[in-house]
Image (cartoon, rainbow, N blue to C red; front, side, top):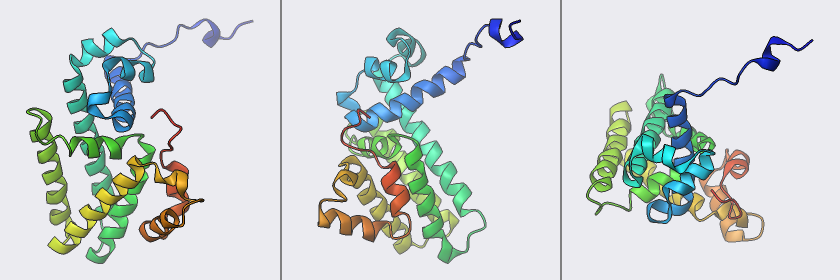
Length: 204
């Protein structure tokens, strides 16, 4: 006798769930291919849905990128806020830094931010990206980073983004320069980082 679940129709995803699904795919694809190199069809295929549905929800690629950027910044600041809660000033860089690395689980988040921060001249994306960058600085200062620590944290974050974008993890075992760089940047998190870092043979 079939169980009740055998004949039950599959639950349809809500529009909010579909939106979240598309944004996750958008972060992955924009992160790998950049704003110019990505199409709404690329994102639709990554999300496993139709391209017209992406357009129906977001309208244009520009709108989709802005939404993905906002999502990345919201995720980033939420992770930073949770990590900083209850931390002593001298604990902040390590705890917030661990949170930043943990966001590698969100495929393409770091690279999407990097792409956005290179689009300062874009009339729509530029202002949004500048405000987002300033929000991160404001957060660091508000939770207790001094100016020098905040500057160093952002500088290291940008270097780490470059390492992920370059897929340097591919060369960790074969290039001593890359090996040294990973050892320097991730003295306690290296194994975790290498297990999550994007690779060159991945489409996104």
